[in-house]
Amino acid sequence: MNENMKVITVRTAKGIVIKIRNFEMPDIRRVMEIEEESFLDGDAGLYLELYEEWPEGFLVAEKEGELIGFVVLVLTPEGEGRIFAIAVDSRYRGRGVGRALLKTAFNVLRKRKIGYVRLEVRVSNQIAQRLYRSVGFMEIGFIPFYYKNGEGAIVMRKVL
Ligand SMILES: CC(C)(COP(=O)(O)OP(=O)(O)OC[C@H]1O[C@@H](n2cnc3c(N)ncnc32)[C@H](O)[C@@H]1OP(=O)(O)O)[C@@H](O)C(=O)NCCC(=O)NCCS
Image 1 (tube, protein in one colour):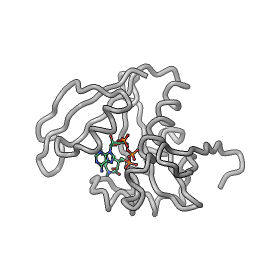
Image 2: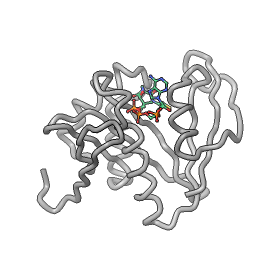
Image 3: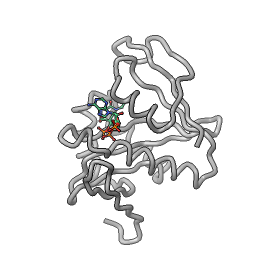
């Protein structure tokens, strides 16, 4: 790990201790493992492109040196933040890792004086919707046939 990298240690509400830091190239293998088990439809090339565009927007969570989750932020042409992807290793879900990643991502955006963050989520993904509502996202729209399998997306937005 780069010695100058900022690392945040978080004890989640569910009592596990994780470290949150920026993504680095060698992390891509674990990111793709987690992304594939989460059926997010992305590919490694796209993740690396987004990282190169804005390295500070790509955060990972580690537990005892193992990468167990990630969040990728992008900036929209309107100057808002957007959660491009978030996923947690299935063995560690429900322990506050997703919420900790999101809160750290909000701070990255606030530091850039960005006022809003938005995202799209599958209509069927009740768990993610619940997480997003719990950190202040509100539903602002719906996009039919947004995903490859024809499923629609709920659009959510939060004031930072
Ligand atoms: C969505 C995801 C990132 C959440 O990460 P996580 O670490 O499990 O979430 P947290 O433990 O921080 O949970 C935060 C909130 O999410 C909701 N939640 C999490 N797991 C839940 C479950 N099994 N059932 C219902 N709600 C749940 C709850 O509101 C929870 O808050 P609470 O613990 O105070 O009740 C994770 O489930 C995941 O990787 N899913 C697959 C990928 C995915 O769907 N990504 C989102 C695409 S838009």
